[in-house]
Image 1 (cartoon, rainbow, N blue to C red):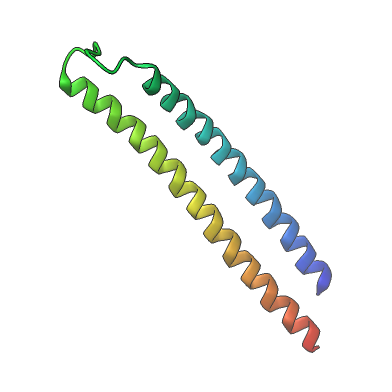
Image 2: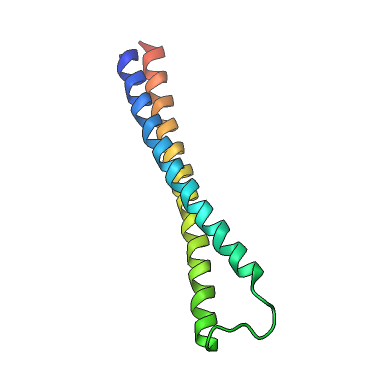
Length: 95
């Protein structure tokens, strides 16, 4: 039984690693977009219109929100997995 738990943990670990890589990539995109926004002039930016400025700001906000939601999902899935493993280990200890 312990071997099966170890195999499950290994698969879970690999899945979490892939999710972490994806989140890291999203983080780089969000950071780069924030840098671009930071480098824009504070006065008279040339976006063609106020609508263009709003669209670009909205896109940056969406990227940051998506990244933070991804981190929250990662944290939640890790907590669920650790809870299951803890329960399984308690069952093994009782046997």
